[in-house]
Length: 446
Image (cartoon, rainbow, N blue to C red; front, side, top):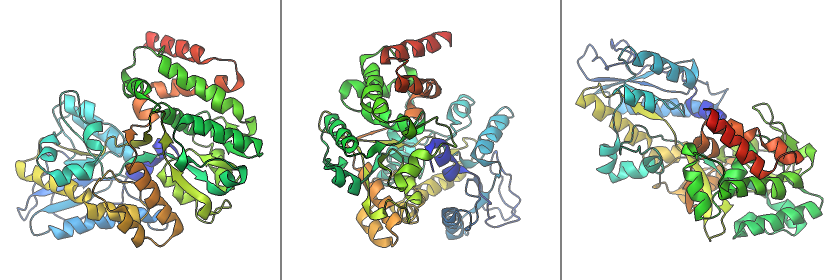
């Protein structure tokens, strides 16, 4: 499993929705028409269509949804709907419907950001007032509160799952090389020293490609000090890449990373290039830059799951750093009645509660934003080694001092332009300054 697009598919690919209380005469989107029995009705469009043989967590998520509907069946009709065109289909449908003044009652967009278009059309609800007056709800949405806060002080979306990314290391290979393990690193100099020791021992420190894993490492290094974190935080609105901290990151990639690994461990990138993961799980490389969901690949791996450990990035000022990206998840129509809006808030609170958060983590579905989850208790509930490793990875990221959006979330459309420069940094045909200048040319042409 890899990259943000995959997480979006896993977290928001559509669901074969089971209809809670069928035949209630509801409308699929736009206004939540009440049912024949006059109970208020809300229709929820979500993203878990796979059956249990395809992907067991999807069945668990559907069960969670259905339990909410059953729990409140005497108060309101909570109708669970499917859109088998996937998260992108949910997004495209919403775009089309906005022009007609319609919107889903509540939908999970799974990372496809509808908020700008929908907010500009005055179609979606500001969740911030509800979050501000309910500490439990605010704790449940965690980093989504700050990450999704708009410049005008509104929050249009939160999620029950987030993309959590640090990296993984093989304890046995570090021990073999006599290298300090990442859990003991206090600066990026420790990273450099470990890479050199691994290389000297004939062990590939990592495999990369011109895409996702290199982005992760670049994002991690960009948290090294206050100046680099400041530029990174404003990356999406950058007017120029001719910044010493960005150039420093590109220089690090070129001289401390890319030119220290042979071509066999540097792939072209793209969704089909998963060699960097295969090298790690076979025990041929010592570090894997990938998210918490990678635990799905670790069961019965050749490297030995007992050797695999999660880590977050060091900084040069005594902090640790992780990538936690919330993005666009639940979005609620502002055209609903007050009663229907309360139902939607009740559902979001349910989905971000410690109880549901624990089920999401314990069932290997993903990482949650909640700051109220008892990870030690969750670990005790999990039997499989890969399940325990997922809980440990989530806890490690949740405890990181610096928690920022991932590379793609930060740089937006420029992500692809930056990725296009990695091959040149690898073969030496470009310098870090060349990369910054070429990216500025792209900005100037927009």
